[in-house]
Length: 204
Image (cartoon, rainbow, N blue to C red; front, side, top):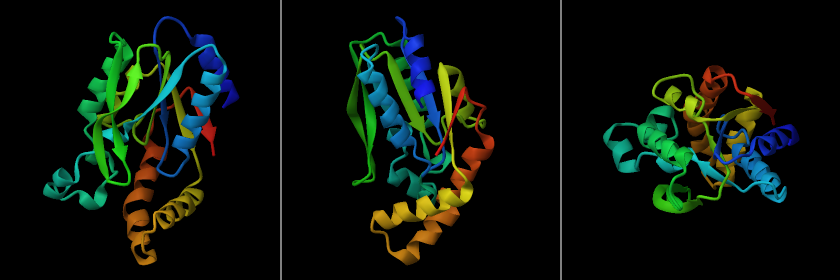
């Protein structure tokens, strides 16, 4: 992580840097992104912010209509085109501030304009499961990133973390295996197997 932070600080210039940080669900993306964000801002040499892809979840009403509610979080349950357009807008950075959507995990919905990304942010950390997935339409995102990062974790550790995550959410024990084994873990294995090679690899 220190090498990554030092590299980014050295790259800071007049153009916004987009960092693509990908990894399976439960790999620790949010924790890694938050730590990197803290280090960059504490350096005093740049201003950074985090933008997760989760704000582009399709609404449950759409997933139900398409028979995808049980697969929520899978690659096909996101508005990839909308996410790509937002990344292009953020990369160009020609507005005083840009409002981005935020996924509310308590309500299980995306809140439009839930966070502001101001013009002064020089390093923007984009984190999400599939942002480096080498599969259409996700593969159209990779050229937008200036620096890419993959987070790697062994499959069995991933399984343990996913079970623990759902337990922490208070989900009944008999419902957790279906969520992990039929959705979250297959999604994670896909990310590990089919993501683009990245500039940096973090192992958690």
